[in-house]
Length: 280
Image 1 (cartoon, rainbow, N blue to C red):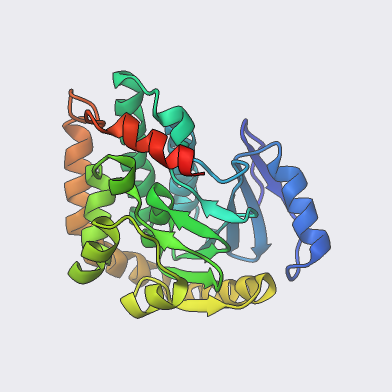
Image 2: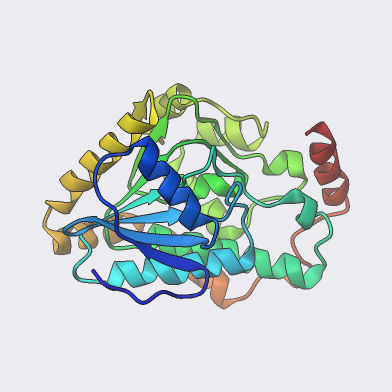
């Protein structure tokens, strides 16, 4: 697969199993690029989230991600996608040090990015395997929930910390929650903001496989991608659309109607974010 390099993205081509040498090579590339594509083998693509140090979400990053995952979804040579990160934190959600000072336009922009970015992942017709090598918190968890198969490192933490940050859920992420988590798990995660480990997440049905180390994490993720890549692609895309079409329509409608003019934050949001920052 050949793609031109673009700003904020890199195409890289090393192959084989995860190793210390390979991980170092990834990190060197990530320092320059927020999104990286690698052809693992015929038909299987790795899309690496590389916004150091913790894949903090911005409107620009989310919209670029949406463009990338949409492009891969339309590429007939792509049979499966592995979504990965080289960092200790898979994705930490918003950078609260920046978010606490967002004005109305910035709030609206990041809500739009969250809606568009995670809709694109959720609606992707290709099989997507989340290779989760670290914590996925708040907005960062939607990279996991919107994927088809989820493989997590045993030391990962997974949670929805929005209530602690003093914000509610934009319509896109909220509808994905409703479609992927049972009511009890919604209550547990959304109303406490406390993360859970991968065993509890597997019991709740949103982690499929737990890996003890990074080598196994990659091996399991690649194995799942290979299995999905072997399925008839048209039937897979059609059935995935059948399962997700109601949720997709709700999110698309919300995006078409634009985000609320009042913005996202409330009178307690800034103080709540500052409290989290102070707690370290």
